Image (cartoon, rainbow, N blue to C red):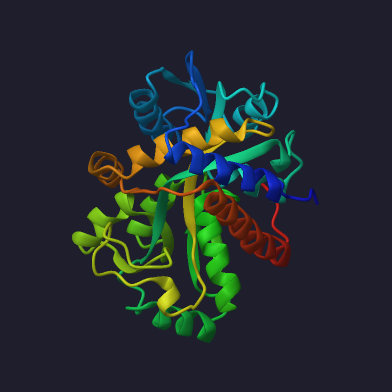
Length: 320
């Protein structure tokens, strides 16, 4: 399996030093021309994050940050991995960037990127059909253990966010549940609403209207802490300590990009992401605005990779 490693500690230390210089008014003369923000296909959550972040960077740096949709993960990631490291071609991508190499051979290495800022986080909600006699995560775990191989759950394709959330849950709880595979979250949710499948991890926007109408029962959220996106709902981790499954997206640049440019991009990105406007715009789409140092984003990537590598190896998962 391809070894996933990120930037060298010395480069991250250099970024930290440059960030200190930026804070003292010694910002580099960047950018002096438009910047290309490469991301995945239009219409998805990554594209949404890329467009909001590009708007904030355009306003903060006085040059156009132009979103360039390049299809799936491989195309967008390879485009930036092979770009000149001058700060004028950057990448906005989510977990797919570092999780995909765990499933298949990809045409890039994580050593070709430096993380700049974590920009957004989205979570899933664990829901069940009301006909399933459970009202908490503990109830669900107990029922699944009492009936191994009898409880089914809906999932998108291997590697999708709801698939990974379910696989991590099964792995950590030691459950034997039957996966019913779908090509996407929409068809999966339709069958859960009909009661043909009993369980699903799904996005807040897609399921909360059905929870409010009592067509579905929400048990918990997949974030490590309770979230204002779904007030009053407990976390899976409250019953299954250590559980966390998030989709997070952020800004990365090609390796060897100047630490001064990385620091400048981080500073302006965080300034925008911390505004009430950015938080509100993300929240309206069921997403949390995030804001981090390059080092924190780096650590999040490594932790997510390690967590999911254990699950993928234990279950022998392969792409469909």
